[in-house]
Image (tube, rainbow, N blue to C red; front, side):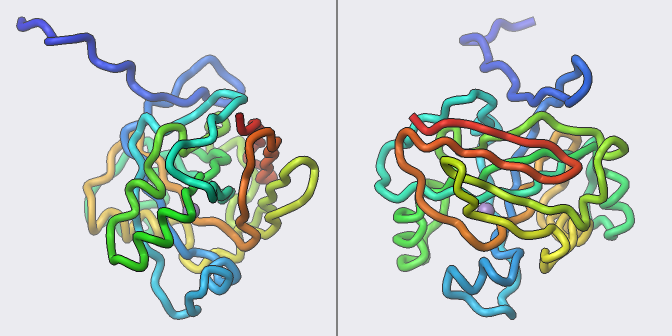
Length: 227
Ligand code: MN
């Protein structure tokens, strides 16, 4: 048995709502442009297919305070329904994809919008815009059987008590099982994978001191302050 050169980082994980269990995070996949009104507010057209990107697993943030990240002056909030997988595979059908779901969480896809706009102009990767430290504040994971109907759930985000984003997951362009199936054609999905399913319209900037409150009916809530 060889020794580690140094101690490995602890595995990122999420608490499970209503128990002492923990959900170990393997990868964080995200889909962009999955609500038509948000596609329009970002200057796209209805017919564009959703795009996939990712965040590092240790971008998960469970703390009530999120540090305003460096290298941006335009940090944006994007509330999203997050799917947590208990199994995976490749080239799954939507029916097989649905069987991989462990539960759901409320997440915010924090975005350095200025760096994203710059990357879009240059045709460059989105990593610095999307994958920074603590860029994925998350609620506990709620097992699917304990959730309401996530295919038709109200989703809303307020900043300092002012409603900024409000929609319904029924407005998604690609359904949850379609997203997972499509992802599985690109990557071998595994237990522990999280999938951010896209944000509705109303994205906007956050400043230091802002208090962010997020709710997805039947799934949970998430609150944090930007410091
Ligand atoms: Mn997003």
